[in-house]
Length: 407
Image 1: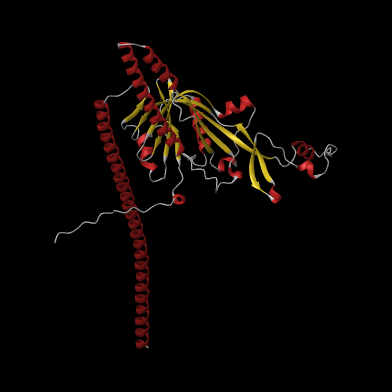
Image 2 (image 1 turned 120 degrees about the vertical axis):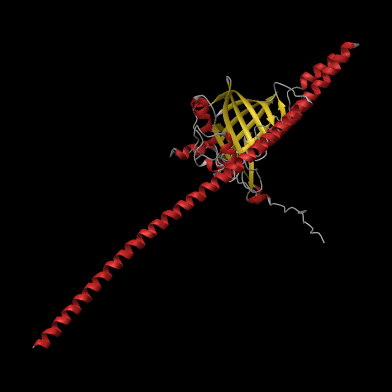
């Protein structure tokens, strides 16, 4: 009977709590300005504690080097700042299979510049111990609805050939809008998985120290902002707190009772908290202070793989079916080339380790042989001394015997 090969048909379900948290490598490649170099440090601070801040990058390092070590180190995303002509670009690569989203930075300010403009302070080290709350806004709006409506209106007003052309333009606009919606969903998914998910049931308010906002303004333009979150208890009057902190006697003449001085105020900026005794609801006032860099970036390209996959979206050009097929072939070849390169790197590392182990064994053997030679020489020297002593003793004994015979 021929052997039957078993195939795995069931996949073990991984618990959500056991999934590893995302980790990002953030670095720059190529010739970038000083502002972009400062931006690398700012983005690392923004993504803490889910960013590897101890990463040291050399000029000789290539992108494939970071891709090769991303798997063993548990890295899930790469954020690469570079330059394309006169523009600064930002690539976000999802490991290990993509996608790759490329942005062009229309304008940006570093965290130091933002804090100097608003007289603020950067986020504290304690705030960086917890990941920021991720907020995605406006990703359901493509920014082309008004254009589509205007084209449809022109199509209704036109007659004959003009009406047909307007209808074609309206259909083309609808396709563009559908492509942009797909692109925005993919970009939003990529951004969402860069930080751990937020669970209101298990997350405490004290851990919400920062907020990271990605706001889509239309036509693929996205703004990035970082805010420091400050929670203030509104169950006590702010004037009373100010007087107590200044060690002044508060003026309680306007209150009927002492307890009324500690009653909260229903402000628009207050959020409900836990319900205390006797149905009293504790409220906290949330204050947002900008503390991080400002980026206005525009989606340039979305690729299905790692930097060289099929182009799913491009702002400047549209690809035909034949071009998409050619790009897919190139993507497969590039993927195969990267896999072969990674395999060769693994083999090179194994060979290097084997040679190092062999050299260490040879060195240890030489040292052992030298030690054995020294030990053998020592034993031979002692044996020679013993033989000489025995010979001298025999000579002395023989002479004594001869003397006794003569007497």
